[in-house]
Length: 319
Ligand code: XMP
Image 1 (spheres, helix red, strand yellow):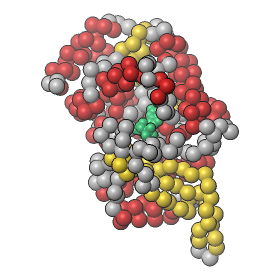
Image 2: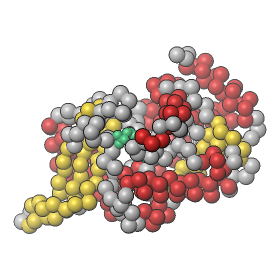
Image 3: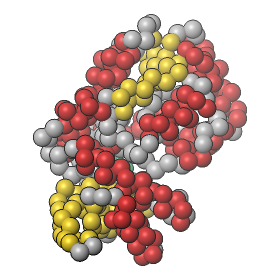
Image 4: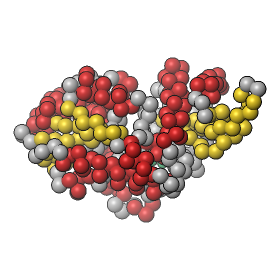
């Protein structure tokens, strides 16, 4: 239980003492943890920090622009934005197995990040937004590897290959403390209270093969869902919500003719720890509005369904 302003001051001194005049790089995802870590470290060492933001082509609508606006424009931080979408999508071509997709996305990320960081001469530190629950989880996973259901790729892999020292200023904090810290540091409310987004991004929300066309349709549908959740006050009442692209076509009517288009599933859950979760009992009126908007506004989608599966036995993501 920290006094946050004191914690900020202490933490800044600690970072300064540790890093000295060295250069630091950080993989910025736009998620809460890496964002808060980035701003905290920037407070401590300013332009000695370079953030690398990798667009893997599997981000949500306008996500790259938003990250640039917040960090580069508003906060005046050094952010290298790498558009690697084509590379990721090429590597994913023809791949349908969820775990293989995760491996490829993880591998490509490491490759892109490594290449970028090699351009940052004399970087000595790799900063990460590791928080206390990650520390516990990865300590556990060394003995419980056999029980891993899905491989998570947003942590790990980098330090070993880059030969950099690790800087993890959030290692002692729980999620709610990281959020409080983010607010104290002046990050926008929306960014601090954002639902979690998996490292492989839309890659695991497009069932089976990932294609550019599918990603574009999903981005639009997902943005409508999130916009309506926020407008109705339901975003804060759910722990995670998103759209899933189903690469199957079903028949519909459009004007005088029939349509034969793709399906989108909506997923919204309430959970404390993401180990178990209830599907959110969203109002029918909200579901109706979202469904109408998606079908009317996203050409290529003619059917929307709502996922009413709890975890367990279903997982939160569909892959
Ligand atoms: P599941 O689908 O296992 O998800 O019920 C539990 C939580 O973990 C997130 N998740 C991931 N996060 N890389 C990540 O960084 C992944 O590969 C991954 N798979 C699932 C999911 O979004 C949910 O919050």
